[in-house]
Image (cartoon, rainbow, N blue to C red; front, side, top):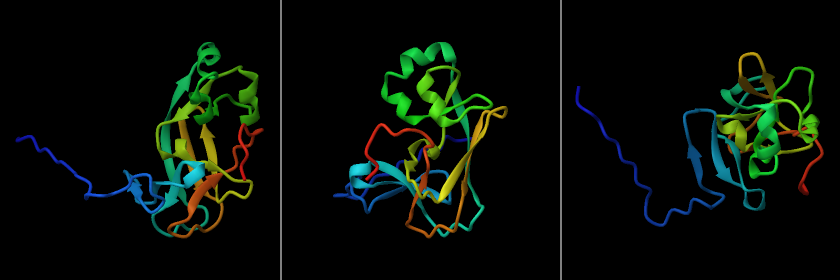
Length: 154
């Protein structure tokens, strides 16, 4: 079988930092967009009905013994608490495992009125993202971080 190489080039003048530019990856539901001061986030590529599983992705576990190193880095801003009976606020204790979602869910922004929920499938080593309400194409998809924030969400 012959090897097939595909090269994709962006059109001249395309600004990847523009809030009008959306990158589609492997999901038909969601893509990545720059939201200005908020940075990159997740956007609905089409209308998403309430209760829809938007993404289910594997996670990379950060063992408890390694958290003392990783919690001091930017990695801390992308992790989920990964122990049974814990909440995200428990990340600040520095105990137990944490996990990085290996999907677009790592780029979800916070909202106190989110349109999606995350479900930690701890034993399956997966994170699931579900819509809380109907989401229109073009809307940012957000979750509640469920913890004291290290930034001003305004």
